[in-house]
Image (cartoon, rainbow, N blue to C red; front, side, top):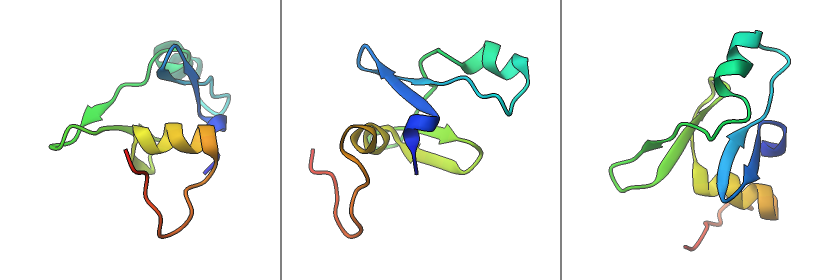
Length: 77
């Protein structure tokens, strides 16, 4: 997924970009603000994206910075 179309990184935080396929009320509420995250039982942050489901924030940031994670590989952190 091309996360750069949805998010941007600023001051070590993940922000949502404006969406032109949504009403102005969505942009007023969410765009250009740090994303709302939910924590898993193990403490990892995750974010809801485009109604697809949840994605771990560390994976989004890694992919935005380094590109796709190859199949079968994991982020070692």
